[in-house]
Length: 560
Ligand code: C2O
Ligand code: CU
Image (cartoon, rainbow, N blue to C red):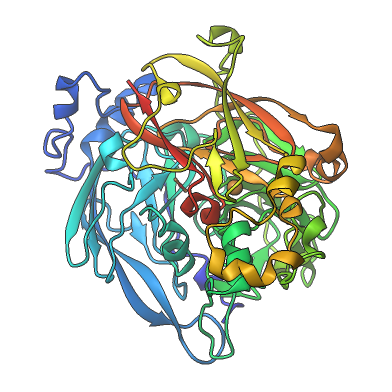
């Protein structure tokens, strides 16, 4: 089944999704109401071409249903999963397509400037909601944990597509339940296109391949295993769940047949806590054409690429020089500096720790074709944000990601509180600011506090002596994600004590272009710059290690 290329190739696409579908214009969707509140109107303001204005008038409406079901993942017995199914109600019927054979949600194809209405139906027996990761949407449409869809009900999300062409995704965001709902299968890809991108002639249709990489744990009965109670579960909760089976688009042992031509690979790390060090088995560099916020100004090559949970990277993979019969693997190379280096001291080492080497999938060259596709020298313009324009340029707004003495994951010493926005978590609409994310190392405090303050007291009594708290908290990486905004990375600094591990990953940090999630390694500080020109309202900043997020390493921030 994994050899079946159909699973990855939905259908030949024209990529020209600019037809007009009647009756679903911006006004019909009520988006015009935004104008009255002073919020940006439907079309992308910085590239509102006539074509995109026309696209705005050709809306898309679809239903997304979250339900429990059984689907085959491993050979043999089907697996109980949570699953999104999609159904187009109005607009291009091919805009929402299931990935055949996958327990993951459908791929949603949007056009920049388009107006979208999504009816989210919850057939689970717990509340859920949908966050459009990376998309700039009004706060009320963003899947804030205070906006839930109760079991048996339906909620409507409406927004205009303002993002640049690229790869985004969607997943649930209920407080303390994001990790488990995503783990059981609630995640899907969003692909944004526009005319400027189409003009580049990048590989499309069957040569445009989404690759959602995840790690999962299965029991002997093919059932997903999440976090159990007891000592091992406590560790997973603290560090984030690491599975020992690598799935690509929901399938194990993927071998994808390819032809001797270039492909556009859209890679999403949809794992809860695993960080990949992506590399080709040939030793060739990876050619990156897009990051979280879409296409780069120009392609960039890396010996390997670090991809943390939530991040996306698009790779130009050219098999035209390969011979039929050859096999090229996509690997995750070994690295140091994340918790793997200290795991040996702990009781329950994951079977496949972060930093371990493994194969992700293979590309099997099966067909010779003539292809004239060439990598464009330039892609799409990226406006460079300047720190000089920042209202706080000299003094960045700092967010410290750390574990407190009670072993809770915190941001600036605070845990998530649903309706709380602190004074230093408010920014002004349209301001440009520099923020600094600090992955704080505090070994002394950790050693001193020991296990005494654990709030999982009952579980901990038993294992306390065997588990050095300091090593655990000192070696956690935090992929920092912001809602409602795309930012640019300014620079990075790393503590001398953590430099050795960092050196094993630094050449794979893709800091070009627009980002919404950035890996902050142990002992590292990352400065980013952004302009709050999306929408006003309450958004989230959190660690995209989903167990850290659910554990409270999340805060509201408000654009006022
Ligand atoms: Cu992909 Cu707030 O998350
Ligand atoms: Cu984290």
